[in-house]
Length: 341
Ligand code: ADP
Ligand code: MG
Image (cartoon, rainbow, N blue to C red; front, side, top):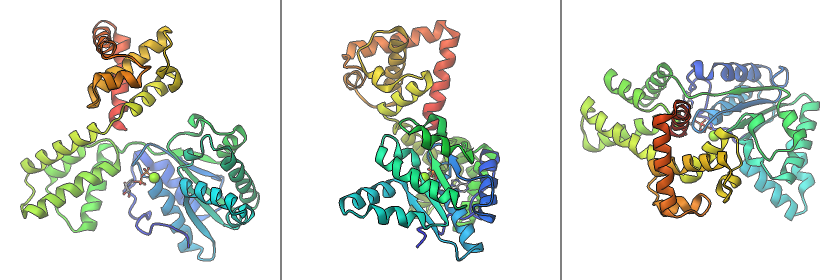
């Protein structure tokens, strides 16, 4: 049992500038598991950009060419839970042994190991064993290794041994190609204008592009209507509104803190240091702009401020963006990041 998702093949993975390096490294690994310099191969990138798909495609490719190799795909969450269970049941040796037997180990979303020291320890030993024996390790993460917080140094350094390749948000041509591929495999035809409108409107990630396409198809078949450009525009615009609404205050805080390189705990604290105050105000400003939260709720999330403070923060940010070009550039940078999620 490899746990691979048979749908996630290389054939179904559309190539573009956004994923070329990761894809070709993956392809090389699939043809020569354990025998390339890409060990481990770490694929990183934001949500819905194809990490899980690509990691599976590599596993499937290996299975096709080397049926005797043992390949295992596991999510980090499952790995952690299995490990915890094994401790409870006094079977952690079996746990380690099981993973050390694999020829190819694929672990998805390793950022989930952050701040889990015991898991990191056990993974470290499994990693070493596999690597020393020329076995292939494939990992995915939502961040580059350097940006993963709460990870032991010795493990981080191993993650960097092979190749880290990122997946970017797909550019327009790739978005269109992805849509065309999905339509073709679902036996659906949409006009060129509709496809282009969709590809233009949704530039965040592939999962959302698929979501929009699916809702378009579902609606159309429900109403037994052909999808005219007008109808498509209505539906796609609505879909876009829905995805923008999903940003949470926590997410905004995280993005703002990453951007200014400060700790989220400090942002949420009551400190009055100038840089922190400004970052906090920016987080409040975007929380007001991009979420449906009340001012009071936003304040509560940002160091226990009241609604007047939040309002003041929003005004300050607005004013500053009108007078300070650099500040304005920060804001639009951040807004771009936030709407990419
Ligand atoms: P991640 O693991 O990075 O969050 P997934 O691998 O789950 O993203 O991808 C989200 C969806 O988008 C999946 O249905 C996947 O098949 C699809 N997808 C992502 N990248 C591509 C691509 N380059 N070509 C075709 N489909 C893709
Ligand atoms: Mg994934």
